[in-house]
Length: 295
Ligand code: UTP
Image (cartoon, rainbow, N blue to C red; front, side):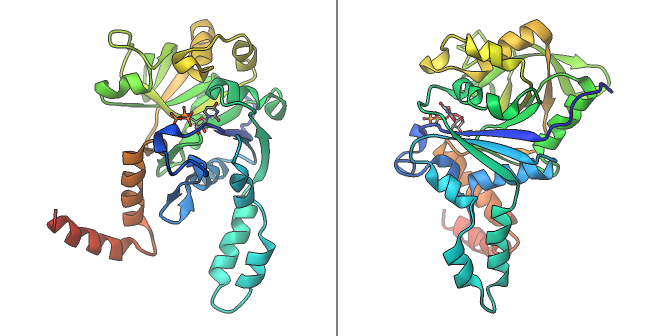
């Protein structure tokens, strides 16, 4: 085991324009799209907290005040809920406001995920930090952040959370040059990666799906990064430089990934999470079974 600093901080970039899920995101961030009864970003905050993170910085863009409001106290609502029969809802509202120490900063222009992460520099200082891409919800038996933190402690290197994606989809994500690590079936050594590869440029069909654990060495690389795919400052391009210089670890995490930036995935996520929901799960299942007969 390498000796590394504890991971207490997380960054959630949520300043993107969400153009792929318009018109839902015209006035509302995609990170606030509900999955049954919770906005997507709350699943992320809960995952980070369950993994031992205490301080979270959410990177906001324009029209994202609603995210700040969601994690704040709501005195009028709390007063209205202070009556018999509403105890559960009241506890839930108070619980959201007390989940973690949550901070906010504005990314003044949506110049890309790499640029968004650079906005976290003063917050993270010289500590290691998790990045949870704001539109990637992952349902998992063990929180994915915790799976990455374990690998960080074991290998002492920054970590990316990956899954094998269908080859046809690799060009939408990124592709990693992975090397097996003996005795660790789900962990890989990574020494290169490429964002949105064209056909023939792929290293593998392992793509990063929304969780990475970085340290302050990423910032000088981000500062001098040229724009990449889509004319944006890409975090993957910075991690590629880091991986080529020092190497990183990839963890093939156990979990189900839902991309809130994709309409089909949002619909699928709602069905899967409704089926598992403690309150509505059984009745939703019965309804869905009947509905499927009509298809
Ligand atoms: P995406 O590339 O999926 O977000 O970034 P986007 O720009 O909103 O995508 P389109 O318009 O639907 O194609 C992944 C995460 O990074 C955040 C997004 O909010 C999302 O959660 N992000 C992206 C930023 O915070 N700032 C940016 O400049 C870009």
